[in-house]
Image 1 (cartoon, rainbow, N blue to C red):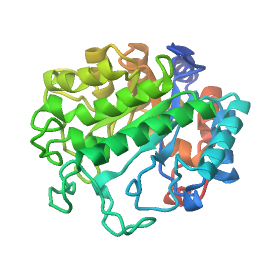
Image 2 (image 1 turned 120 degrees about the horizontal axis):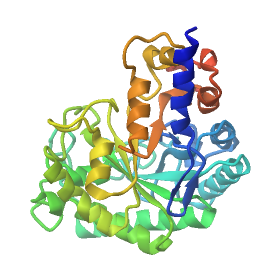
Image 3 (image 1 turned 30 degrees about the vertical axis):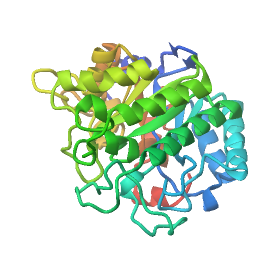
Length: 375
């Protein structure tokens, strides 16, 4: 091993392990467990296995855990009865147990609050009798499937998010994350292709933010001024990887400003590959641009820790500038504040501890088999 190279990486990696205070959210390091749908909560109730799954990440030094998507109280919020609910006495008792387990291990945890909107097919379980809902009743491919949401539909779902936020605070969570990305319901309002409304919820970029803004405002009222609200946002959608909410920094600024004003504290900026620049003429990634335009802390995410190059760079085997070098330089330059790790943490609960201790030869490679169990 090239020890000089190893020493450089050991020194650089320390930037991942610097504490940070984001308002009331005090984190021991910059590593975030990204939200990943698991579907191990039969009947929507997270059990002891789910609590153990999150506890193991906290025990191994993950700074902040964002749970898998959890469902707000609306019958068309999901198409899978094994996705955890964030409503109802049993499910909330299960989440209280998760919070207790994570906090006892010294961790911090926020639930991701979710409604899938028109990605759900009509007739799906657990409520096949209910039609799927979206701003214009359009699928992600632009097909007219159902009628547009009514004002009553909108109001009930805004209230469902606010109720979930209040429950999160009551249960002792450290904040909430609103899933406004990847072509799910909130994002369907933000995206012109799926939002063809001509009322005050559509027609312009600013109008398309109204639904998201109403949810953020309702959640802020429900939790008070100091409880952290994270908003997950993406340009890409499921199956539409080249989609753009904003094609220029100016448009992105227009999109973000109402969300900041409504009460978002942190933006979780989802890209498929964190190293790709968001706009021409600048090396800033999506999280970098969002931080620059809003002044708010951001989380970057997108293929962190997955490839051989990432692991080999710690062993002094990579040639040139590796992606981990790039990530660490960007973090040190304060392009973004936190780094979310998905599949690498899904397969290896001790990923953070191993990176911290230089035990890279012990890192577990991601395989599809990891998706079939709660490691």
